[in-house]
Every structure is written in structure tokens, then in C-alpha cells.
Length: 322
Image (cartoon, rainbow, N blue to C red):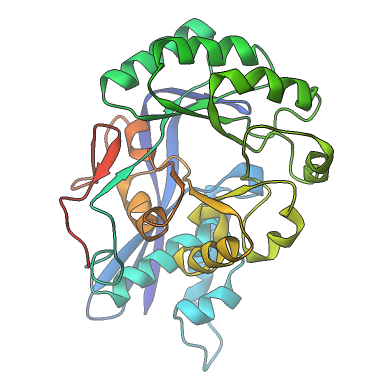
């Protein structure tokens, strides 16, 4: 079995800004696995926040070409060969496709024919965020994800809500609210009918949420990667965001989803910015999730050929299910 990993770059449709900065393009790593009969691909987005780079991920992937004698690469052994993260995700997803003979995901999973997904309002001035939201609503957006930092929180949310009165809203603080009065801001946000607030505090500071009343559901993102993280999040959050690049692939993500529901968490499935090749692999989780945020391809200037169909705020799969 031969494994290769290459860097690919996708220009963004517009500059994308969150609390950590702005970018104009997205670099991904595309993995190809050839078993001598056929080949399959997987995609991941290395994330500096988690200590990853394009170079480190490619090195991890290529290390699988030199396994010890007697070790066979498959989805089971991969969980021990690589740590959870982007590199393992791309390999795991390629192995799923190889195993299912390119018919992923329809032959092994019951995938909903229409999956409503969040569409992202990038961090900007209140006026420009309102303009983004208005454009997305014209495209049929039903669920808007508002990127925020720790400034002009209410002004930005009010601007979006004003132009999108019928849309559901979720907020992503990307760990930026660690130094503000959380109980006060939660109460100020309550009248805007926010469905969920994602990762308000930095990872490692989650315990402070135990003592803070919050009328809005809180969701762990950066603080939740694999099943090992769940126990410490009980009482801090009511929801977790499963991303395959954090979990290290669909194999672990399915386990994470099952344990999360067992512990009483609601589930969101999210993504890094990437192409349909990455989004498609998350569809089995999306079909069972309470919230879905798989709009990565919509942020790109151009998706891969034969990418997923996005229409009226949803991923449309033409009624094809297992």
C-alpha cells in the first residue's frame, strides 16, 4: 500500500476573519492511498492552533510508508500509528473510501438527502457583517454562524439579527471571551434568540463555566477533540463540536458522537475551511447531529470538480441514501 501526501491551495471567495486573524487562501493536504488495485483520497486542513503545519502533516503521513514488519495499515491500526489530528484524518478518510470502493458515503451510512448547514458571517465591522448576512440570506441561508472576538459583541449580533430576522443564529467566539464578564454578555445576548455559543473561553479555562449562569446553550470546540475529552466537559457545556480534523478521522468521530450522546451532550459537526472532499466525509455525523456547520466549500473561490451541491442553505444529496 503506497501513501502520498501533497499540499494544495484554494483561494478564498473573500478574506476570512475570525478572532485569531485573517486569511485569503486555504492550504490543505491531500492524501492518496493506492493498494495496487485502486486508489482513494482524503483531505485535511492543518491547524496552527493545534501545533500543526503543512510540513508536519505531510511528514506524519509519509511515515506510514515505513511501518515495522508485521504491521498492516488499516483503520484499526491507524488509531495507534498516528495521534488524533489532521494527518490521521486524511489517511482515515482515504481508507474509508478505499474500503467502500469509492462509493462513500452512500453505501455504508444512512445519509439524509438534505442537510441544513450553517453559513458563516466572517468577523468585520457591524455594517459589513450585516451586509454579509443579507447576501447569505438571499442565497437561502437558514442558519447563520457569526464569528466574533471580544469587541462590539452586541453591536455585531444586533446588526446581523436586524437583516436576518427569520434565520437561526449561532455564535463562535473562538476562545476570545476569557477576559470579559460572561454572565453579563450571556444575558445581553439572550433577547437575540441565539441557539448556541461556541467556545467562549480558551481551552483549559472551561471550568469557569460551571459557576456561570447561561440561558444560551454552550458548545465546546477547541476543548473537545476525542472521546478522552468528554468527561471533563460535563457541566461546562451542553454541546460539543465534532470536527474530523480534530478527532483524527471518521473512525474516531463516530465513537465520539456515540459517547457524547450517551453522556447527554448535543452534537454539532463542524469543519475547517476546505473542499467538498473533506466535507463529504463528515456527512455520516451530520445526519445525526443537532447542528451542522459544513460550509467550507462555500468560502472557497472554487471547489473541487464534482463537489457537493449547496442550495437554499443546505447540502443537497438528491435523495441518495443507503
